[in-house]
Image 1 (cartoon, one colour):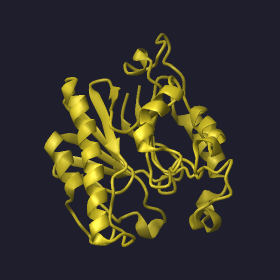
Image 2: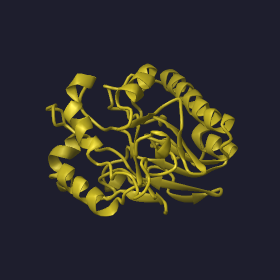
Image 3: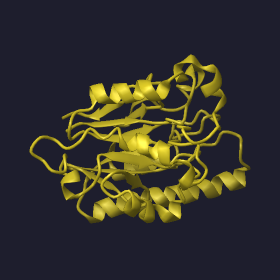
Image 4: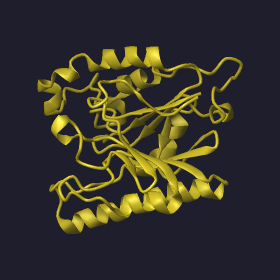
Length: 255
């Protein structure tokens, strides 16, 4: 089994909403088909795919059923001889893991347990919980980075909320004995405007000993270096926005 990640599918099978980039950037033309074909070629039975936020433009759950069905179709299926695929899925967990993005209005963070119950066996929604992947726990939350859209006071509240959600994810995994972590955020781990090299999120990754931090949200070549990429203080940081990866899922952990 291998672990892959990508973010920002921005599906709109049941919505007329699109981001400006989807209207003008050629990399978004037929991106759904390209991504589906790349998944079919790259993902092997038993592999796990983490989608790092901004899945659908549907504002309510009933408005994004086709988008979620498309996501379900990406499941590569169980490994041969394993009814559930990887060690985690043998306990009944799906192989497609979703993180909440800033545009995922259909996903009420307080109702994550209901989403996991509704899509049991098909999708796993990562929020205030963790996903067991072999010796690793996959932890995460939407996160937050300052982009000049909020007042400093409101931004501080959002950071506090997301920090607590991430702490809950880490602590739940640690309580079950996990000591190896991959940390997922939708937003980059540092501010896109202040050229930060440290934040509460990077400090939390260091505190819990995360081996990698994986994030999305940054679109267009001018934004691909808004935050940390590569190694910093023993942690590897990866940007996995779909347009950055040209719709090829990035391998996070090998077989």
